[in-house]
Amino acid sequence: MSSSTFPNRPTRRSVLLGSLGGAAALLLTACGGSSSSGASSTDGGQAVTSAQQQGPYQGDPLGRTFDKPAVTLTDTSGKPFDLVAGTRGKAMLLYFGYTHCPDVCPTTMGDIAVAVSKLPKDQQSKIDVVFVTTDPDRDTPAEIRTWLAAFNPTFIGLTGDIKTIIAAAKSVGVYVAAPVKGQEPVHGAQTLAFSPADDKAHVLYTSGTTTAVFEHDLPLLIKGVAA
Image (cartoon, rainbow, N blue to C red; front, side, top):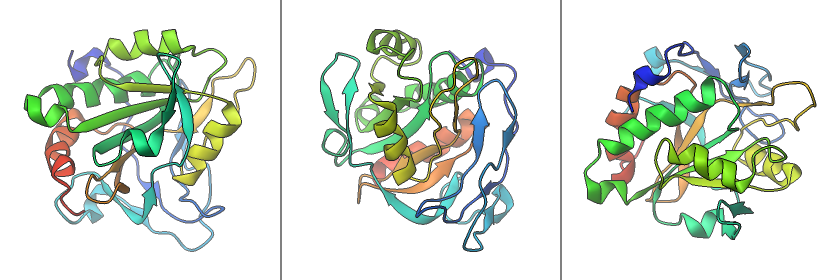
């Protein structure tokens, strides 16, 4: 698999970091539709662009850190999965999306999968890639497992009640809306990177982040290098 598998890659956009109900107001997207900053900052949040990046990571540094969502969902084998306990002490990439997404979700998972595949085997075992569906009525555990297996069979897929998923996403500043019949689900398009050093998110990647950026940053993340 290569990043060229998904040709119509969305362009990288700035992301507005601020507070909205205690969370960051981040890039929103309806898969298959256009992206926009669908929320406003209420505390004068700063726009983070690649030109403003500092530090060792090529991803965007967060204006604040986020704890992992304190939630138990259902994995693709049908068993409860405590997100905090199940990934404790490991680097983690967290993404909210859905398997029927025609563009952003498969592009993101594909680019991450390529980057992970290029890590040494011992480092591959030190990172969890977690995909949480935003369309649980359509995304059965079996469908999520089949979809993720096309990228990397070790990726963790989770589902659950949509209200629980929305709350989990909100806790890390990701907007997820309950699906509306006849419309594409709307969800934040960013990937959050959690450090094994403190189990907190310090860096995010917007839609359109290239494989090269993930390849550069994942070894740093796995080692717990500070952002």
